[in-house]
Image 1 (tube, helix red, strand yellow):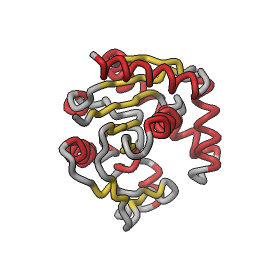
Image 2 (cartoon, helix red, strand yellow; image 1 turned 90 degrees about the horizontal axis):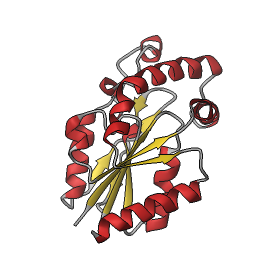
Image 3 (cartoon, one colour; image 1 turned 135 degrees about the vertical axis):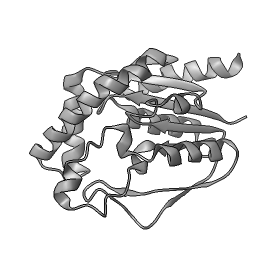
Image 4 (cartoon, rainbow, N blue to C red; image 1 turned 180 degrees about the vertical axis):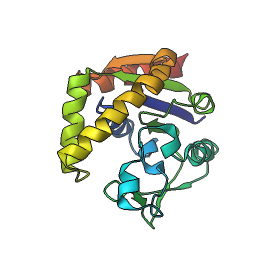
Length: 203
């Protein structure tokens, strides 16, 4: 039976790194990752200033209906055409990524547990709790080097992300099956989560 594992946490908490490490430890023949960040709405119809004004850390910025439909399809054994997104232009790219179902479907993101219908689709919800200063340093480095943003832009996005996280992130932490410390080394986190998932599978 296919299972859906969700990983939530604040911006820079280590969600993506943990999810990638879990896929690597399980093997790509057994696990796949469906990142919620790929499901931002296409803003090609807006001007550059209007795009910058969007709160990308609010649920309304994401096509959560499509995300939920793709989770359901993968669980049912059907492949999906996952969107690809350009974080510099805030637009979807014409190409999609074909994702085939696996026994374990991992999803991760700040807002993966923001809606009750999404939470109901998860077999396990993991929350990565990480100190805010460490999360800020991680986000600063990521957005500068991977997303081509300047400091002012990063600071604006961070302020929005923290405000939204305070409102929506608590829902994930309070309903999580497992809470892990995101300040630990990734190998320690991966082993801890893997052990927990193995115990669940054996029950």
